[in-house]
Image 1 (tube, rainbow, N blue to C red):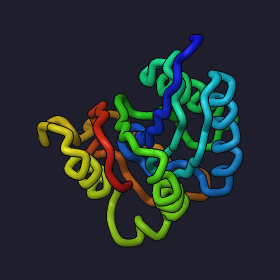
Image 2: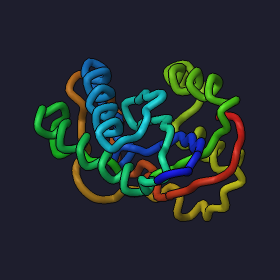
Image 3: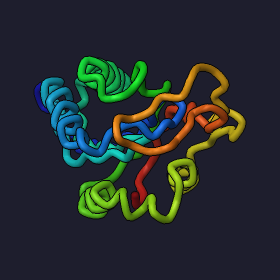
Image 4: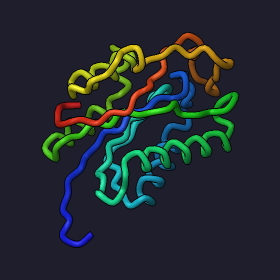
Length: 185
């Protein structure tokens, strides 16, 4: 695209199906490298990535020739297959439907990168559900609370190899796709 100049920075946030805590910390860096490869192979710039056992944060510089929903679909499909081929979880791993995407200006990138890198400290104080609702409210994204987090009532719980005790039965599930204007992480 000749004469097209953009700065599109998006933090993408999505959860494990049922918000089960199954991303094994022992394989976290390998998963991050794999996802970095997906983003790079799609011609996009990965700026920061970090995951918790039940969700993922990715900061990308998005070029205008890539639809955000296509990129997230490719990240989720590719990384799910990657995790399942390695048998990192008991049962079939999948990301849940939907995602959140929040835009930032260039001047905010240092703060957003620091926020993503410090996920462990943030989640010592608040749950993913609390964090996600704060994003929606901070970015003034309209949402219906009946549909953002919906109880999961089907299937047996997944467990991560060597990871924690989360049971997706009766856990809320993230069911939203959102984008919005500029703010802090």
